[in-house]
Length: 152
Image (cartoon, rainbow, N blue to C red; front, side, top):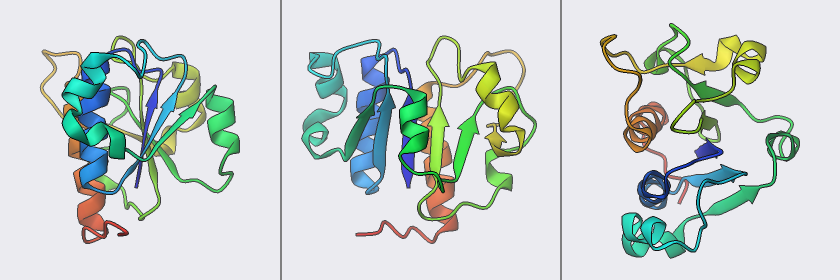
């Protein structure tokens, strides 16, 4: 599996997601600009002693990321769709992208890919769940569907 963070802003979330990625043998992709430095204490503190083991690729742009694998199956986590994350069929090498904490994935990206937009159901009083929680929820559903094949 692959988790993609598009322009992440909060180092603690990225560190937590990195830790989940290490423990599930999931590749973490970060698309610049980042709202923090990868050398910051916060990212290492939240990733604990796992951060050095993260399979990490940092991309200069969304376009560079897309060009890296023209055959990728990329899902977009958003609150702007009705398709539940649990209603799609994941494959072992899929990519699941999350947007920046303050604004989510840009509308122009979502509008080009409506069939690949997924959401986590919740009551309407809140804007969204925490990014690291959302990544864990969807990642574990995708892994469940591939029988927790961690590709070790």
